[in-house]
Amino acid sequence: MFKELAEQYYEEAKAIREDIHRHPEMSYKEFRTAELVEKKLKEYGVDSMERMFDTGVVALIHGSKGPGKCIAIRADIDALPGDEATGVEFSSENPGVMHACGHDIHTANLLTIAHMLCENRDKFPGTVKLIFQPAEEAACPDRPHAGAWNMVQCGCMENPHVDAMIGLHNNPAASGHGTFGLRKGVCTSGFDLYRFDVHGKTAHGSQPHTGNDAILAISQLIVLLQQVVSRNIDPLKTGILSVGTIQGGTVVNIIPDYATAGGCFRYYDNGTAKVIRERTLAIARGVEEVSGCKIDVTAHTGYACVENDDALTELAEAALKEELGEDSCYYMDAPATGSEDFSEYHLVTGVPTTFMWLNTRPMEGHEVMPLHSNKWCPDADIIKYGAPGMAAIAVKYLNDNA
Image (cartoon, rainbow, N blue to C red):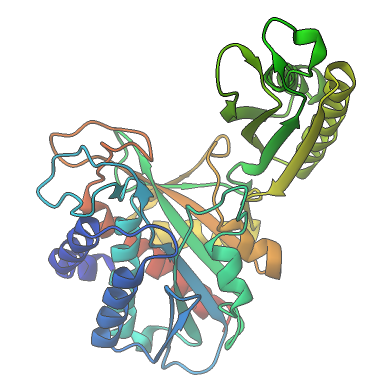
């Protein structure tokens, strides 16, 4: 039903994608993108539209088959820091900012879904809620809650209440373009953010015994943290501890009195997260005792694991096969290693959700690159699969639960 419409609307969707790609905007600054979204939604004829959390946009499309449930579809709209190196003709015109994660595709995809559903209200009861979410890439130690959490706090899941929610992300792939990766249960890693501030005592480099070396202490801390994974986490489970920043000292012959480091620790279940936090604090206390320094540990929950609802995932599978064919989807053997703040929608509200990965080839002449690479440029053709697939899931959910 929707596949033919996706073909019909493709050139417009491609133009929208290229426009957004040329004008990428960082988290919390997506004002031009939000205005473009609002312009297209008004053109397509959504029933209502509301700006939330400054740059978020929420729109409603009511089916004409009568009252019913509400299903939400989410797209993230923000870009990343980085100088684009794709060489495409629609490369970023904003220095130091680019769509390296494909959120331009996600946004154009959801707008195409809006276009299709507005013209097919007679196919479903209830309501489809479209959520264009800012700041998915924004989690940091100083501001751990990103766009999804803030959108929920602003009321995006109410008026009407959302009964189920779906989302997707492009997955760089050399083959299987347009195939949806599904998974029941945990679908992505979760992560916590850590900051370590070490306060020591300065001394001359020739008299280290008169001071407390902050750099030595933080170095010991970083090395010892690696034993959390190898010695404290169940070997049948996964934990990843990555310390990505470290600063300290001023000149080579002075024992520094301060050093700081930041880490991102990933996991696939809350029990592992608890072990990581407990052991990290214990190691910090031990290094304090040995070094004579004071170590302040600041820990923030970042994004929790995305946990897909079994029944909603099975419905998505059925809808995708009906719309796009038997080979349109498959079940992933393991969760994705990356993290997603889509988890907040279920975590905060309890609403059943399912999040899918959509295998996506690069543009012709380009290599497959990982997400966040300044050379990753997915083929907009993926919208021909993403839009009809997601629209079909929404319509099937509303009809099956009428």
